[in-house]
Image: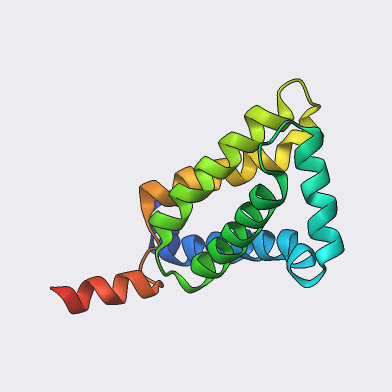
Length: 138
């Protein structure tokens, strides 16, 4: 059986599933901060404890950008652009919080950084609003 021939026809579907899975992860990981100001303040305290400047501002920026990126990834809209922003977000998270941390604590940031890099390189694929917009522009 030629695995590449058998499964390559599903590459756009697999990209859609990755976008949905990680988009939901971004939304799930931030919705509590959006729905509860106390949770946002708790996150700002965490950022302050880790040396972030302007912790309440940093908290709002990080949370809302992650939430927006999650929505973009699910819809397939501005995939590359939002993934580039998430690369910056998770590089900062890694450098400011996770240097010297355990793998299990660092893994979510590493995974989200990795998928962000992948999406910057690949774009949203065939099942993305971006691909439909590109067709209209041609």
